[in-house]
Length: 530
Image (cartoon, rainbow, N blue to C red; front, side):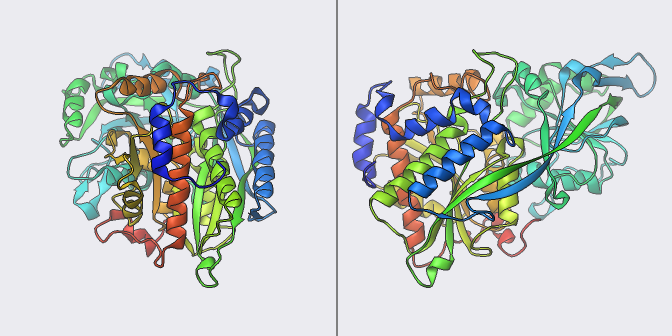
């Protein structure tokens, strides 16, 4: 982009674009070619490949006239503990509470390495529905249930009376606290078949990779060792044997967002987990475009994307490198192109803009969680976060979804830009996938900052839906998310222009963004979470 183009003009280009244009002419794709190259080795947080990618981003920030805004030049150092499960010594068995032979279910269990894992667990199992603990919203799956010394089993989802963001928050934030308060020693999560995004075999393989925890223990989701795992839903009947309930019946209720029963299961779980802990440091990369207004420049709008991906693994598509072209080299490339457009057009908004490229997203939003708790600039004056993560320009830009649009005034800003453009804002089509808490904008939400993540959506009833579905089936968190995949470059340019215009609009507004009065998350502006 030579300047910030109008969205309508770019949209016309997007509609007329061929399915696979010449990528050599795209500045956006040129960044992805570097960040998703073999040289970066999948950009695992703390790896040499990640450091090379971070240097690339910092170099471009500097060339685009941004100011270094980290705690150490361009970077903010983040310290991690790395937890590796000895999969050759991992064992999980289901044992009838009364009598009977144990069943080995190790192949159907993936231990969650984002929590510090208990070495030994021998505990009864209790099904607690969706595991939702939101008494302030009139819903609590933990009420009247004895979980002391037990492992909870939950089916991811939520009742109709809770909004999708509320369900997402309850799963991500309230569940760990509720489990610890109830004296539980662990949790097993189940996914309804229609909500599975990647095949179980790929999830099982990913579970062999090391996990990471922030060294700063106060910022961890779980504050004590727990047995945290997911279970293969194709074998879920093994968990409910002898309970008088069938998993298929529970899924029918969950698919309709109806209330789930809560009951003790007829089994105990015995788990043996050996882990190895080590330490690693990595960096967030931060550049600032200072605001032009003497008063408003002390406030900042954050534009964020994550630089890390999954590193390397057993080859499943070529060379064993998880290139992460769309997840999320694409988002980092978008930030670089937005910064370039502002620089070349000599646009300096009234508020400051922070370009934040974070580490540790794939390990649990850890880099953004650390930054939100310890901002390197504009502490207490971060007025909004616009996050870009895997926006997927697989077809022309006609529809977008914006997670968080119904929670703050940022939704009205986006709608104003889309008005008359030919691009439609559509509701979240997959609320049960709890995307609201699965990307870096949530780290800002929990600290009280209004946030938005925008992504492209296929046109319903067209082949675009098939393209989108196949991408998730074959490329999401797979080595096939590489430089060989087709993308719509004109749609990407239109999307980048939209996000740049949105950032400038918010930064120039006379009033800072605000939570809507009925937003569940407005409370965090007054009582931010740790």
